[in-house]
Length: 471
Image 1 (spheres, rainbow, N blue to C red):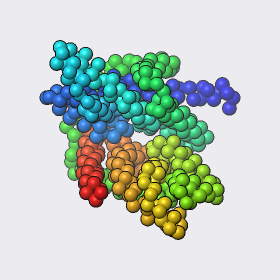
Image 2 (cartoon, rainbow, N blue to C red):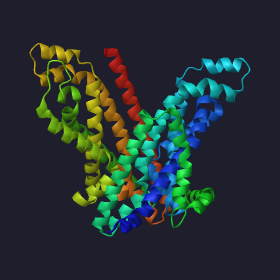
Image 3 (cartoon, rainbow, N blue to C red):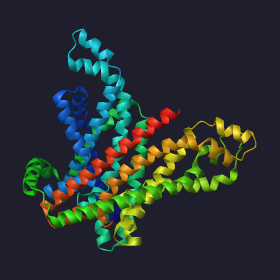
Image 4 (cartoon, one colour):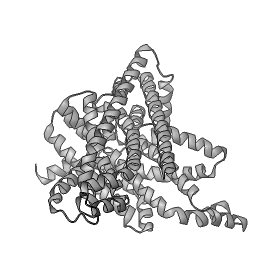
């Protein structure tokens, strides 16, 4: 394939992915900021906005994309709006929490001196919260980038659509090229998000986030078929779809299929979380710097650990660069269709994420006890097991609980690529245009995710309380 052919091969899906990413970011920032202010202000309006944001956040991103594809048709418009609205709900929550966390005295003093509410907010609150807002903005960038390459598996445009088409046609050469493009896309934009978060001046980060709208427009304008008409028609089409989908169909067949799908989703999430956590333990041991590089006094530098540490770090970085839906597609090729593929995909992705988080938990812990044991004659391994690991257990347990909540969402979605779970029912209903069934399955998915989030929050709160009482 010549360079010109390669450019033409990637042109449309890459432009669609860039447009989806930039457009969703623009929507998230423009909608999320005022919604966050409304939530932080409280009152009846704030409570209504917060309830709506909670509902939107409870819908897995790919499930929302399915709904928008059903309403708007195939193409990047559905992916852009789905990701934009869900991340706007996430941004509203983060923005409200940041505004509530900063000191309010300057704004209150300005109001007492006669300043308008807008002036008091812009001068008294926003400058204090701005650095943290930029940091969370980079987090939103990271989420949108990763999700923009996977919404295509349900027909919402971009590299995800291209990779699924290649797989359906058994064109494994194209599948490999698009898969590599997805990994490269995420690696590049991950580095960009990290630069925004840690090195870029605050004003550069703010301008960059607000300028994404122009990038999205330019990317969509360069496509052979622009989606601008779909954006203009979106409100009417969505209203028409909702009218067609009501009431949800909860007959015996649908209820049975939903219960079986929910059971598979829970099993896949549980296996993925527990298996990934167990696999993460030895990997974290290899890359935690106090252990691998001898940062604890008395252990010394151990050159033999460099090779396994390097292999583990490269492996974790590579796995984290692969979206879980793409990993699910690979797993279906290896182990076949069904929940086993979803479990394999989640075990690998979870191990990569938790391996890094557990290593960081060990690195952040106090070294005094472990160093004292080493000074008394214990081996470095024994000193770390007794002196480092117990203090890291509560933090690691919190990470595992967060990952469980994430894996519930992910396992719901993996069924859409043939990896079992409730997502398979959602995808089948979308493909067959059974909109009453589709709405029923989407409502079940929302309840499943919401209940999981609430239970996880309760367990985390209890874990934090027990840890404080012990200390």
